[in-house]
Length: 210
Image (cartoon, rainbow, N blue to C red; front, side, top):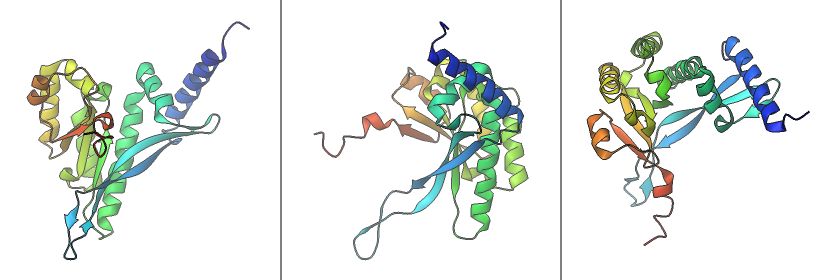
């Protein structure tokens, strides 16, 4: 009777997450947020934007707990050691969709997928990425893997070699939420990122703040 409701909710999350992972992650759905290019001036003088790809975002549509956002379950998945099978599921689904988009003939699209620090530390991560590229016959350049700043404060030498091995596949690498972590610019420069995504807190007021 003394256990508070938050503890009970966490226990429910843990049990249901274990069950969901063992069901081939079928309850975890992948949504896509469009990525739009920089504006291009057309002949009329107006700005024209182009849809160039999408970022994969995972949601948990639990049969028992309902629809859950990543903030509710991703930290728990990392804590329980379940983020690797979950992340591999998202990567596989994203590559499948990228293949379908580009086979449709409507354009050449890229897909961005978040990788956790735990995934990067897995010994077989390069093989997992290579397998998804080869099985879906996608252009490696159309796969962008996003990593957070936490990556840079771990084993820098090992991390750099892993990222170089991933880049050797032809994949692009992005540093996500730059400015919210603890990494130094020197360590960022040491890692082979193609893209740096500045956190929205640094950009949201640009139009109003002198």
